Structures are given as structure tokens and as C-alpha cells.
Length: 572
Image (cartoon, rainbow, N blue to C red):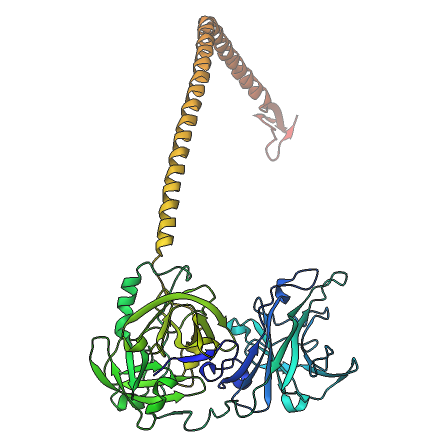
């Protein structure tokens, strides 16, 4: 099966993907056009939050009438960036007759936060005639996907309602009004992007037909991913030979009639229907690899060990160019869920170009489209690579090698491969339940350090050891100097103490005699004080008195303290 070749600026059937908005969660792109990268910030005061890089326009297979416009930013939007109390806003400007005058405008709502979950809020629409704008009743949905880290704000509107012609100019614009004296705004692009919509005959809107999509069994579902993270995805694997050797058993050649492509085993939980039919493995490939075998839905699968087994096509989607094959032979699966790829990541491709199995090529991710979940890469691919895994430095599959671009009708652009990202598998070939976003999950395990990291660690260790030795030598020298200074001070203090001791010794005996004499005097005085205390105590005691008591001729003498006469006697 030949690898598809796509025009350089206009990809149709080989790049038909899932939209990330609530209204089109299961829709696929049938057409899109995107501006060139805008590197200039047009306002005087730079604000990275409002830095526009692209504006774009998309049509999806779920509606013949709806059209989607996007403002694509340098960084992920904030929910309140157009509800900051300052009048900041974003818009899509449309010039229907290309006279450099605005004919229609779609803009963000005022006083309303954006939603983070692809859900939309009501935007605003204005029609312009001779420079004068009036509000339009056309419904505009404004949405984002902040929860999954996407960097765009989208606008959905009816083509019929806004009277959109097949050809027009457009640009995106955002303005931050935090500083009224200095302009902070950005256009993308400048000048305008010229858009030509596809005719109805070229627009692929048959994604729901039985021939372009379908399934024979209930779809398998996602597992909790077991992917490995890397410190730096831009680095090549520390041992590419070992990594390739570990992945090859999971990569197969898919043969359909007179053509062939590539497939790979995806880690997933088979449905009861698939298990009941005796299947054990799910293989992923491109739809265009198996499209000629959809009548009987049987393909041949050449394993890495040279054996050939039968494969059954259980799900397919022409618009997304995705298909699933089930086999009754156990094939080790590859991880395909983890963080979103970025420009500059190292990638490898394994496949069967020109029918030669197990061919490895390498390159980098050259661009990522966060709206369509596709990316381009520089690794060499050829007919037969279609459906093969494009994987990162940890071995996780990022997408399927799908097509190459054309420079002209007969000249192929080398190093310009297109890949369908693994999120496109969701709802078409695999039900994404446990891990709902294949490009939005956290890797479970920490990978080994790369060669560059190991070298950097070794250098850092050597530098640390050298610094430690210098610090130790310095500390020893400082300690020695401090010890010598302390010894000198101690010696001087000892000499002074010895002199003081001699002087004190000379006066010791004299001082001791005086002390003994003073103690004797103290003891004498203590005895005197004791006698005086006794005398005072005696003087303080009450004295006995003597009285004579008479009773007629009788008398008695009474001697007592406080004496009293007996009863019947009286004191004489």
C-alpha cells in the first residue's frame, strides 16, 4: 500500500482528525487552513499572555454549515484573560470582498470567563457596512481546552448565518488594556490570510457512512498507562540499538492484496466481544493501508520473526485515516499514552518501507498542531511506512507515519513527514475511558539518564569533588592558623597567670594568719553575744511576789507570780 502524498499547505484525506471542542468531540477535520507563524508582537508594551502566533480556520465532518476559527497563542490562555475588568478582548476579523475593510467580526464575550473543558460560552458577532458595525443575531460559541494544555481560543459560527463567501481574507487580533497609555496588542497574521474554502465536491463529509467508518466488534479500551518519562525528550536515546531491539517485536508488516504497510501493537484492554472471538492483540495502522480489504476484512500480518498470521479488521475510519486489526497471536504491546509532543523532540520511525521490514529512521518533531492532534517530522519515510509507529526517546508511540508532502505535482518534499497523533485512535479504534487523553497523561516511570545527562553528571561530580578538596585545604589552613593564634594567646595568658600566682603565694601566709585571728575574735564575740542573750532572757522572765493574807487571827503567806489570797482570806 503506497504512502500517501499530501500538498504542502492543503492536506485533505490524509490529515482528517479529531476536534478538541465540546460540540465536535467525536468529529474529524475535513479541511483547514492556517496562517504562517507570526513572530512579531505589534503592540509597544509586550505581554506574552496576549502574544498571537497563528490564526486558522477549520471545517469538520459533523456539519456542512458550521465553521471554526482559532486564535492560537504563544502560551495557554487564562479563563479570565478577556474578563479582567480592563476591557481586554480577542477577535476574528473577516474581509469578504478583500477590499481591506472589515465586513464581519467574531469576538470574545465581555464580563464572562472562558471555560476550560472545551465547553463554549456565548461570543459576539458584528456586521460592518462602510465602517459602521451593528450587532448580529448569529450565534457564536467561544471555547478553549485549557484543561489539556491547548494554546488556542476557538470560535464556532454558521457559515450561512454570517453569509461567509467561499473566498475571503481574515486575521486574528487580541488587545490587553491594562495600560491605557501604552498599546499592548497583537495581530496574526499581518497582512491578512487569504482563505479559499473547498467546494462541496472536495469536502469530505461522509465520515458516518458505512464504507468510510465502522466497526465489527465492540472497541477495546484504554488502560492506565505505563509509559516512561524522560528528562529531556530532545536528546536521542542513550542506547538506540537497545531501544530499537525492544520495539521491533511489536511492529508488523500489514499486507492487503498487492500492497503493504506497517502496523504496531497498542497496549489496550480488549473488549469481551474481541476476547470471545479468540483475539489477543490489537494492531494499529492507517485506513489507506487496509481500505482494499474492507470487503472481507481480512489481512495478512508479517511478524518480526518472519511468521505470517491472519488479521481481522475490526474498526476503521477513512476521515481520520485510522484502522484497527485484531489477531489471535500475542504480540507485545507498545505504550502510546503520555505527555504532548513538542517541536524539537527526537523521534524514531520503525516500519516496512518498500516492503522491507524492520527499517529504522530517526529525526525530530518539526511542528505540532494542537488543534488537529497531528505533527510533522523529519525522519525519512517511504511507501510501506504508512501506519508505522513514530516514537519518542522512551519508546512511547506519538503517532502513525501517514504521508509525505509535495513541493509540486511530481516533486516530494523530503524530511517532511506527516503523522496522525495517537489521540485520533480515541472513539474510532479504541474507547478512551481510563486514560481519556493520549497526549495529556503523566508518565508513570522515570527513565534512565541520557548520555548527555550522564556526562553532565560526571562533570558536575568532578567539579564538586575539586571544589570540596579546595574547600578542605582552605579549611585546614585556616584551622592551623587559628590554632597557632590561639596557642600564642594561651601562652601569654599562662605567663601572666604564673606571675599572678607568685605574687599571691607571697601574701598567702600573712593573709592566713590574719584570717585565723579574725576567726578567733569572731568566736569570742559569738560567746559574749550568747551570754548577753541568756541574761536578757532571764530579765524578761516574770518575778514571784509575796503577800500576807489574814482571816481573823489566822494569816497565810502566798509567794507566786501574780499571787492571790485563798477564799475567805484577804490581803493584809
